[in-house]
Structures are given as structure tokens and as C-alpha cells.
Length: 251
Image 1 (spheres, rainbow, N blue to C red):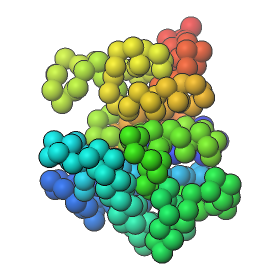
Image 2: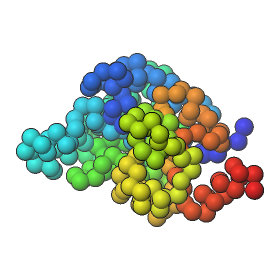
Image 3: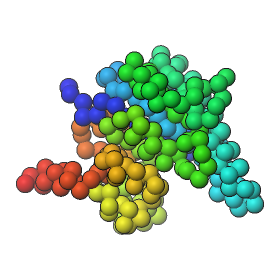
Image 4: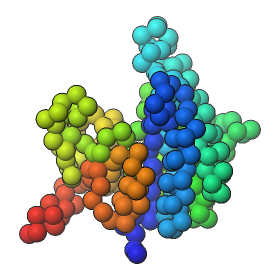
């Protein structure tokens, strides 16, 4: 079967690693994601991953306690490195060759980020896990995902969440919220739909890089997406949005 996407960047939140816990890393969740990644890799997909750190450290908490924003952001970057190491270990337990790549120099733990080297790892079939965000404060891991995806020429960003797409309102709070199957970038931005931060959305819009927002906890979703099924919500440019709507409406 032909694949819709050959090279993907998977964005995982730190919270996705918690499972039912209030914080930290649930080993069962990490292994579950590693198994999904292995299935994707077996189909010939080149996989890069950006992971958040919210299960270990929340920058907002630091701000409320009076901590300097820059200091808090660097602490958050280190939290993403802990999560990256956990995911790397889980992937390697499944027989997946990986490279942990950090935007902050920590050579005993991870490779430094060099775009050409990271791309070469992908070409050789290794899973590349990007950690430490962009390496600079004031940028979220969503922005890091958009930046890295564009740098490595990914075909799509796959944004794994706890819900099955983008809604008109938070579906966990509003039972009348309606799901978008496909939505153009400008509408996400104008409505302020907060699935990813606006810096990330704008960067993807400018570089015509689609985003698929989907439920990461359904183990079949990743494969369904790369095989071309309509899963979650596709965020794309206006032209692709028109094509999608025409195709699904039968016009």
C-alpha cells in the first residue's frame, strides 16, 4: 500500500506519558507509544519526535511562584530531555534504532542538533527524538515541533492529544462542541483554537506544512493516518482545504 506521508514529525505532550497518574512517567504508556512507532517504522515511514515536559515540570507554576521566566523555561527543557530518554529506552526495548538529539549541549546524554546529521539518521531508518525544545526560552515545544519539522522537510506534523481532533470548544467541558474534520490555518488562527500555540501554527502556514491533530491513545490511528485515512482533524492551507471538502462532499 502506498503511504500518504513518508516522513513525519510526531508531537507528543509530556502529559501523554502520565497515563492515569498525576505526574511523572507511566511505563505502560511509554511502551505503548514505542510499539506504535515500531509499527509505523515497519511500513517504511521516517519518524522524528518532539516531546514536551509538562508531566514533570510546568512553566506556569514557576511563574506563579515568582521564578524568573527564563529560568523556568530552561527547567522545562531539561524535563523534555528526561522524557526523551524514557522514550528512547522504550523504543530500544522494541528493537528500534534511535538517536536522542538535544538543542542544548549535553554530550554525555544526547547528540547536539545538527540538521544534516538528523536528516541522515532519518534516511538510515533511525527514529530521531528531539529534546530540549528549540534551546531558547520563550518558545514552546509546539514551536520546536514546527521548527524541526520544517528543517527536516517532514511531510506532516502529527499532533497526538487526548481528544480525537479540533473542536469548536473544549469537548471535555462543552458537550455541544462540534469537531472539524478539516480546517484551514487562517480559521484556526482567527478563532484562537488552542490546540497548538499560534507561533507554531503560523510557521506551518507560512511553509505549507499540514498538521493532523488526533487521539494518540487509539493504537491504530498512526497507521491509519499515514495510509491516507481521514483521522482526527487536518489543518492545512486554503487550497488543500477546498480539495478536501470537494472530495468528501462528492463534488
